[in-house]
Length: 103
Image 1 (spheres, rainbow, N blue to C red):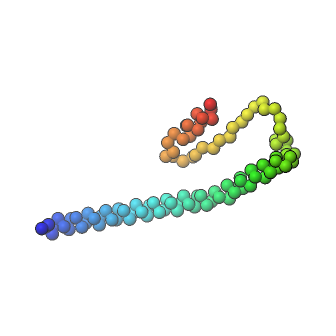
Image 2 (image 1 turned 180 degrees about the horizontal axis):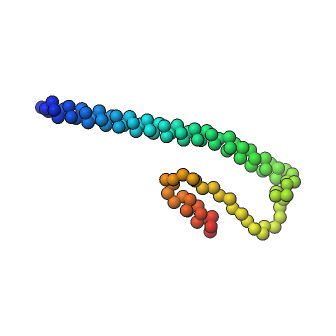
Image 3 (image 1 turned 90 degrees about the horizontal axis):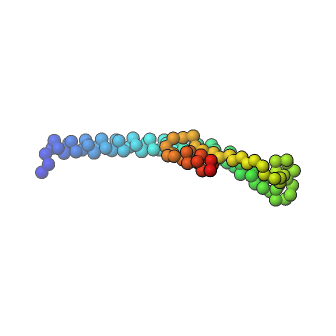
């Protein structure tokens, strides 16, 4: 039979572990909520970009490309616009993107 002292120590250990687990769950919940809010806040921008691209595509397909930047001409110079993350913990993503675009 286990002595009462050892039993109390094990109970305290389990309770302590439960408290730590609850704290970790609360932190994870807060982080998830923050990420969801950021995604929801960015949705209007994404929708507008999709709308602009669809409008430009429809105009070009209909032959109504009247804007000088949408006219077909000989390519002399080319510019590439790429977007990288501004957050940490993404490994070498930004470096790899820079290398890829540089080549």
